[in-house]
Amino acid sequence: VQLQASGGGLVQTGGSLRLSCKVSGIIFRILRMAWYRQAPGKQRELVADITGGGSTDYADFVKGRFTIFRDNVKNTVYLQMNSLQPEDTAVYYCALFNGNYWGQGTQVTVSS
Image (cartoon, rainbow, N blue to C red; front, side):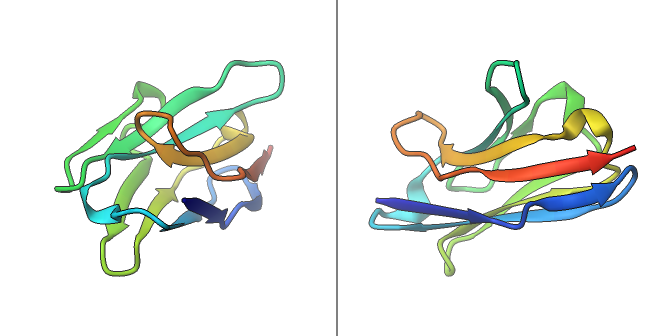
């Protein structure tokens, strides 16, 4: 099983980024997928998750700004991040919601 995340980068406050996570080696369409993040000196936290059927849930600190969605043909889960703030700076990880498999992380840096 492999999870390959991409799309991080440096953006100014108020900007947008879209993260992608390509999943292989497992039946993607039935998986509950998630994005987590970890800022320096802080614990990893759940950002958003999406079921195989497309139901979503978000952490309060990203509601209204981030959108998680998936393409079951491309075996890819996405995180569209809008209105980014400096406090969103972190390494973002895609993973199975149950934590069994993780991607390598992609750095998101929001400058003030």
